[in-house]
Length: 329
Image (cartoon, rainbow, N blue to C red; front, side, top):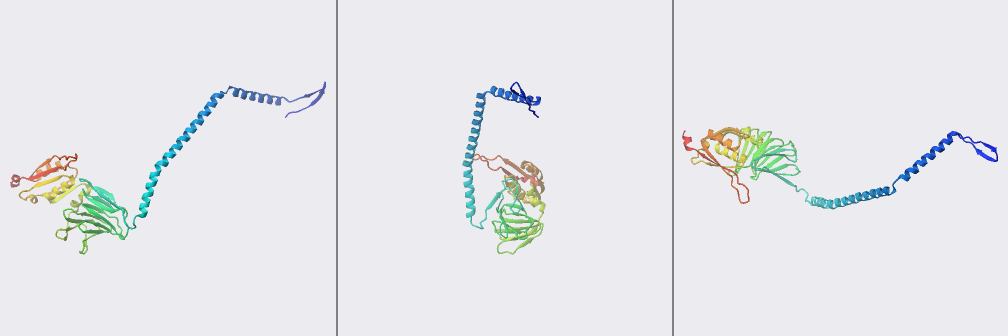
């Protein structure tokens, strides 16, 4: 607190204050003096230059952002137009006309993939499957060229059909089966469940696991018999299995698996007299023929691939001869 008092002395008015007030006044004066000294010590030119540099940097950043926005707008325009075009085409596309996809297995390979309904398919070397991008309607139908193994997801309300160029159709609801359309025949093998095989003007034939239905286009006949499932279906697992197969069948399957041309020279038509019971998986074609050479009276020669004018290579060729001298032994 500050106390004031007045005393009359020699015609003068004297003001008395306590010591605490006096100290506060002095402290404030010193603080103001310090701030004045700091202001006087400041380099105003340098501070002004720093402010200008900050302003210029901000202007550059703003200009760069504007440039990016303009570039993004330019790049986005074609994408917007493309999206609008596809949307317009999809809107104008006739209703009920499905879009189809097609998968082909490269020569010498086996491919495995899923259909839109999550059914699984294995395609053998050189085979093609055509199917709709989305299954619509009451059925699920695909078209096969070559050989395919199917694991169909069960759906009794929407039967699954495999159609072939020969007019044969295989119908299933949920099962595992194999279809092969090579050599002017359609072979259907049932591994599990039930399937029905039919052609135009012919009643359905139901197969049981282990059955094989063979339709011969040249004779228009459909026959059913029992087969060895392991031998017929091993291809999807990368194996080749023969159970009492003739040499011509052995060479046919080897030719497909290894993508080579195998030419059998059988002057005396004796190849079917030699049957094979063997399985192959990771062997090379040279190793396989070395084994066959021991088991059967054959001689073979692997030719070098021919290079065409466009730098592509022809398939390798293997010539096989039945050795008459070894046959007599």
